[in-house]
Image (cartoon, rainbow, N blue to C red; front, side):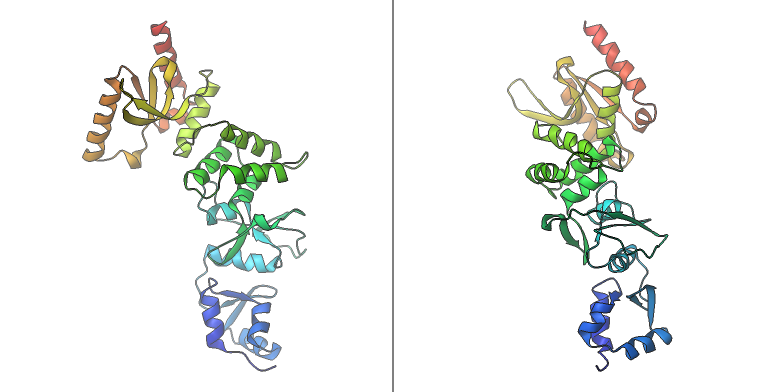
Amino acid sequence: MGSGSDDELAGLAASQHGVFATHHLVELGFSDAARRARISTGRWEVPYDGVYRIAGAPRTWQSAVLTAYWAGGTRALASHRSAAALWDLPSGRTDLVELTCPRWRRTRHRDLVVHESLRFDDSDHALVTAIPCTSVARTLFDLARIVSPVMLDANLDAALRRQLVSIDELVETAERLATRGRPGGRAFSVAVRTRTQGAATAESVPERLLARLLEKQGLGPPVLQYEVRDGGGRFVARVDLAYPDDALVVEYDSFEHHVGTAALVRDSARRNAIAALGLTVLTATAADLRDGAGRLASSIRHIRQRAA
């Protein structure tokens, strides 16, 4: 077999974050002698057996994920926190590489987190920026075993809000995978069930966490993304959290979204319009998240006691 085209390989590698594998060399017609020559002269680097990088190509996280995928065999998929990063979900991490495969090639690599699973259906497969990974629904299911309930909710919120996944897909995934004894299955099923019962989607992780903290304070679950309307039914505002029976709303102020004169004027006018309808408006900040919403909960209890 003759030597393959370096230009053709370079074009392929450029579309794959600078990396390629043995099966690409076979397809392009590179002989073993040509492969050894390019490795010995430093034109190609060998991060794993059977996986190569064009010398000088950027060492990105994406290239690390793709080389690990080929090191695990073509039945592996980027999964868990790596897949979450590819889908841009809150629990995504780019400081590690995480894979799932039916059976891992037992060459150990300390920079990889590898999971094994015998259950991979066609619907669990996806491709993001040329990297094979788990689908959004499967990624969320896998996250259920390694993240807190609050963060699982936050990831579901983000995926649903951006329409990366549908409720029907989540329900199907729960029915298919959340079998008895499967890690994370119960947590995932519970989180999906709340959404089939009409639970609203939080706009951010802090909002979801704040709602959980208020529940833990014994105040009951607030309504997320509550629509405030005037006496004629006209829309006035959508607020982060609300206790409608108490005529009380809570707005979370994040630094990045509430900075500058324009933001101050906008928020003040909005909250004045809400207050004019007779609702009490409370403001929560990152400090309330740090203290477990204790201060905020005291204010809400005081309002309730005063109303009683």
